[in-house]
Length: 167
Image 1: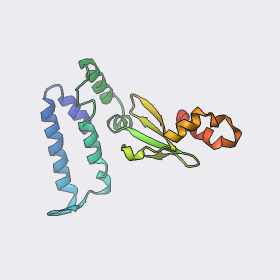
Image 2: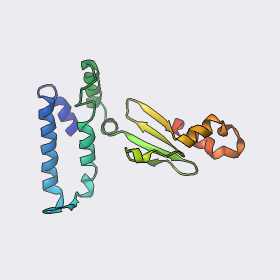
Image 3: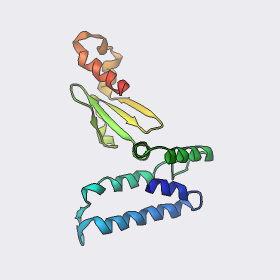
Image 4: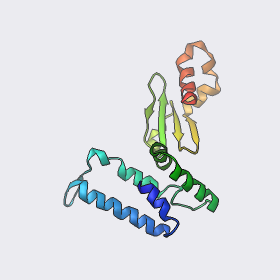
């Protein structure tokens, strides 16, 4: 809802004002619902219902919906229109893309949108709603180039390579 209101405000307000409004809204939410001890940042704790909210606000501030640098007016209008038309699940993916990690003989797991998620023996799939990017780690790319997936001994590797494509 906050993202849709912010995008709607882009028609009548400057981006800087919208960013200030988002910041103030986040601060108000945290001051009402968070528990903390004064002068102890480590004590800050949000209720479970709001755990991901600051992260989404962080990504919304940096998204193509509010940051128009290096985008044409048509691109900005398109992204904003799509955000307002899609359901909540898709809107959340647009704001904070999902990153899935695939490793041999393990179930796919969500990964952090961070460089620490890059592993040489894994595959990462980034879904931004508008684009899907598949990244093969250094070792996986080497195995793929050497065609290990064609050898019956490496059936689990073949399955791991196929898993992101199926998803």
